[in-house]
Image 1 (cartoon, rainbow, N blue to C red):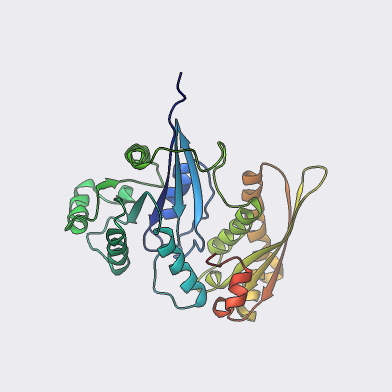
Image 2: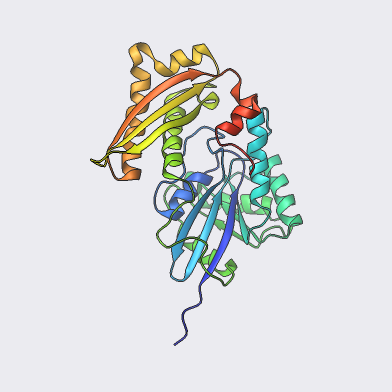
Length: 299
């Protein structure tokens, strides 16, 4: 008897900041591997999310939101977006249910069309509008032949996500799986935990402060009792920001650390002993060497 034929393919998820790309990534995988917040530019790196269904393996690439870069870090994030669509089997352009095609969407549509990449328009957040209003959104985006399909979803509620997988299955080429069965992301556990801590900074802090933060895990080691010792340094750009992050009598840093530790333990499935420090690194987002040191590099 012949062995069943497997399929596997790479699918890029692109769009402007804050449209729900990471929420969709987590919904597709069924667990949290990408951090989310209500602030733009939450995602800084490309994250591969692996979904296995039957004989098919989908490898989704969650990308930073396409935006007008104002720092060296921003330049890197924009470059990641363009690199992510250079060699994929299909792409999802994720948009909000607004009947207007903005600059980032037009730029992505033009690039995807030029590369002849099969593209699906995914209208997210349909739980926030009446279904009748979706018709005007579809009309705004389908003036040409950029999209092979249009599918409305709610990444937050999971509505339409199964239908999206059904549709994408037809774009997967035959071939061996790209990742081992049971693997859900290409991100090392250490990196996921660092991102979880950065997510809590985005959650708890306001205005520009969280966008100027970076997290480095200087220690990530498992003890004999299976507790993971995790030492984390939070970098910020100003002394005043350091004071805000630490808070009165250390209250804010304690809150951020507690929330991060709880999510780290859920992800790792074991106890975490987390210690955090805050250091100032002025204008680090425009310091290319430091940006590279923090893992934001194009290679």
